[in-house]
Image 1 (cartoon, rainbow, N blue to C red):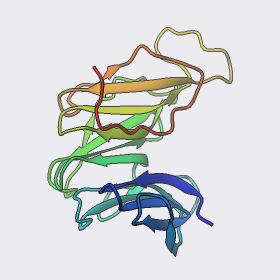
Image 2 (cartoon, rainbow, N blue to C red):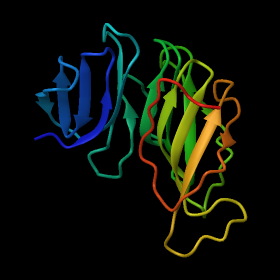
Image 3 (cartoon, rainbow, N blue to C red):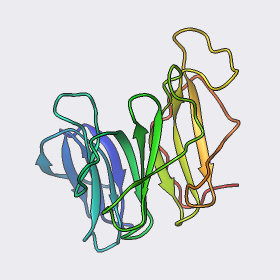
Length: 194
């Protein structure tokens, strides 16, 4: 049995599910065949419909949930939970740097990654971004949670949801005014509103 953390459909019929292994469907999700067992995988994203390029986030074996981008060196300084590519070169990954949320972006197929400011506070608010989705190279949304944002008075032990949007490839991110006491774990869209 596969315990799924993420799913990605590079075409309408072919999809992949990752978690404690990888499963594949060729009938639009009506049935799934487990392809491999193995490490706990956090996210998956394909950069083309031929499935020649893929990005998988893998949790570290010491269970600190430190994400590593498949095929990228030097990315172990982040706890990564979500990844989105709009083409073979342009992609964004989100998570935490251990003190607050992190957003990193590549425009050269993962050879190099740069930090992008999320605009969220760091410690002691402990904001984390869990997922990211880009409609095109400029328009994206990232979701997660924080133990408090700015001046909000959050009761002890509670978290609030975080929704960030960008229309300029992540150069700047704006926080959505929607909040709830829920952890947001995923986002997917074929059309991002606003």
